[in-house]
Length: 167
Image 1 (tube, helix red, strand yellow):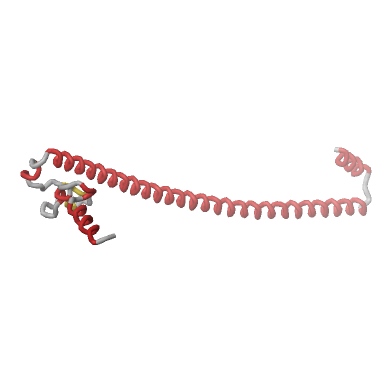
Image 2: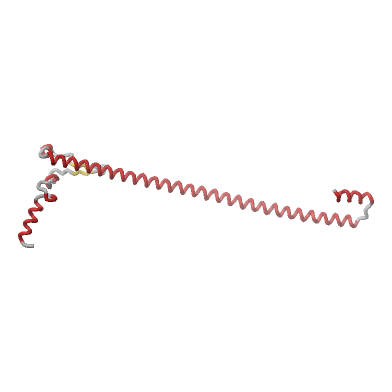
């Protein structure tokens, strides 16, 4: 590269963006066409003076297209952020519902376990009571058999015992 190449670069840079002369003047800092709005969106070219708008129909058309493009992009961005926020809230609500559901199920399981333990305890008590009653009945039968065997029986008692025993 020689010294002459630098002057060629300067000429290209002064012609504007992408080599189109006058295009850099479209967004000159004097007019400040891009303004930050309080709601977080970008507005383009609203405060551009009328004499600049009327200077070139092509530039005005480009300005309108850019303005619409930025407005659509901002609207898409707002819509996307809104969808993301709604999705985040829905996910948090679903997680909270799931946690409440899990808690309710755990409480129900705990109640069922407690009831099952109570029923098991009652079952053991009833089984013990039945075994005790069976043992007492066996003892009473043995005692009765011993008393009957030790006592001399009359013929009437023998008939009654035979009737009771056969019945």
